[in-house]
Amino acid sequence: MADTGMQRLEGRRAVVTGAGSGIGRATCERFAAEGARVACLDLSLAGAEETAKILRERGAEAFALACDVSQEDQVGAALGNAVAELGGLDVLVNSAGILHFVHTHEETLDAWNRVLAVNLTGTFLACRAAIPHLLASGGGAIVNMSSTAAIKAHPWAAAYSASKGGVQALTVELSIEYGRQGIRTNCVCAGGITTPIHGAFELPEGADRKLLRRIMPFDRMRGPEDCAGVIAFLASHDAAHVNGEFVRVDGAMCS
Ligand SMILES: NC(=O)c1ccc[n+]([C@@H]2O[C@H](COP(=O)([O-])OP(=O)(O)OC[C@H]3O[C@@H](n4cnc5c(N)ncnc54)[C@H](O)[C@@H]3O)[C@@H](O)[C@H]2O)c1
Image (cartoon, rainbow, N blue to C red; front, side):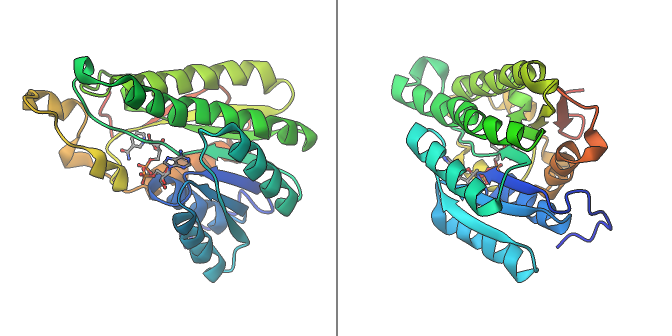
């Protein structure tokens, strides 16, 4: 477990979606290292269980729940069960996400809809289910995973870019609507983080390879723990006056 010497999340009750892999798993590990109790949600129950097991082996309190964030009933049930088990809620992290690359003129409506359903609607559904519990706790923090794709053109990723732009807009909207009631909502615009999501990366046929460097900072790729540290900061009291912010974690890719 990362020994940061910090315990900024001591006793905090956290739900993390997409917890079974990559940035979501690294976030669960960092949260646990900083004292949080964590509900690990993922479409892959095996992935979520593996994350929860890693945390418990390190002495933290954690459990796994299966949840497809694009399904309204599953999100409602999983959030309800997580909050019941945790005894309340202080932090929600939306890290569940999918990506595929295709020429936009060849994108099917089904594929477009699936990306929007998971990345954007899934984030909305989890926020909607979490907000009453955060309000009941007197406030809390939401951290959403956006992407450099929302800031800088990423070729062959129309649905993904649109979904992450939507996540940014949703984030800033929530920050104003619920900020005065103590809920801070921020997002992380990641880029070039080495995780299994890159397995989805397949250049479409005939794609101009010169455009590749826009989305892959090959010489500056970093691990998911570099995102997790920023997410932990945004979830913590250290970020008490940070609300409606987009934090780039991209090694200056968009600078
Ligand atoms: N890795 C990067 O460079 C990068 C860059 C920008 C943004 N992001 C975003 O960060 C987040 C995490 O990505 P990652 O790199 O850790 O990828 P990852 O593939 O390692 O993890 C994504 C997780 O989301 C889960 N998931 C997928 N569909 C789901 C669904 N319908 N319901 C619940 N869980 C679902 C997967 O099972 C997986 O565990 C995503 O939102 C991604 O778009 C990643």
